[in-house]
Figure (cartoon, rainbow, N blue to C red):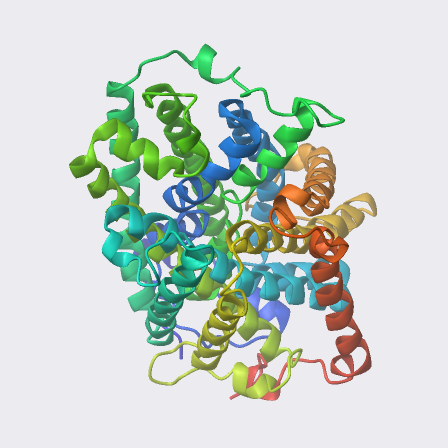
Length: 515
């Protein structure tokens, strides 16, 4: 039996309010996960996946290097595009707040084949994202203290990449253990980490504001002369730099993916999605803007190598700066926890539909911890393997990050595109009395699809500076994003079509009518 909400949060019989488990019953599942998460827990899950401090500190150097200070404009651009996607997700979250949100939404909107492909892309992307986020330790910890550079002294060609793999593997091991011990432990650590992250982010904005040396007009128009050799001029450089902003603002669907473990998810999940995205945009945008306005030398090339960590230490001094960098370490830690938690629910959701090999084992919920333990271990192991395979790759940061983002955007398209088709056919109807876009639903859905397709193409574009920045030039490296994503999509779907689709269907022990 699952724990149910009490008091005002629990819908009463006959009051017309959807019950927490109605969505599960509609999809043919029986409740198995324990409902323990409240409003702040679901909000924290969404915002910790987005992770303001992790994203801004990990990719600031990239945006500056390719777009100069004016790359800041990519922040509102990405926000507006992702807001269109998030609004579509809010309608879906109000109706289907279940584990593995993207998978189940794609399945309901586009059918079992589209659902499997969307879930497969999202699950693979989550594993790559887990590795990409774990790499952020390397960008922060050695700047706090050189002691954290365990491999070499950091001057060697592969020292940073190898040390990043070591630190990242330790972080993934920690996250795997926490997630395996149940959602309550993960939620408590995550919520505490998010509280620290939000306080630190606001404090950082205030500190930067106190050290402003130039106006926004100077910052927002300085391109560093980049894009001179690009056929598109600065716009081409700007599109490359926009990856830094695109990396931050996704993962807001996590609030709904924990819906089977939340109270009143149909009401709370849409709110958590929007709050997480809007809070990240406002706070992150102010951090980036004030950092550029406060840094002593706006033309310093250290901005493109040391990143936001350099700005903090240079502007606020080593003592205060290191305090903020430790808060960044906390943010990175809870971000990894949230990414893995979302991946676990996605794997569990696909497995209980018997849409993965060994589905019965992967979908088994631990009677003691009330969470799927095996998916936690599998995702953790794959995340470490991805790191180890790239141990001597100096471009590990940009390459892994780029591929992770592209696969997330493609997975989101597996939801928004069939949803648009359903709207055009007049078959999509939001839950009555819940979050609804009304007449704005169609134009917002169209914009969400156009945005997702355009940004996926932009991120995967075969730029040498992203996919083959050093060493000999090879076509397969420059086209690496298309090749990797294509192999994952086509190879995975071929397996599904010829093997797995013949077995698909809710496993007996997970059906709504199971004892």
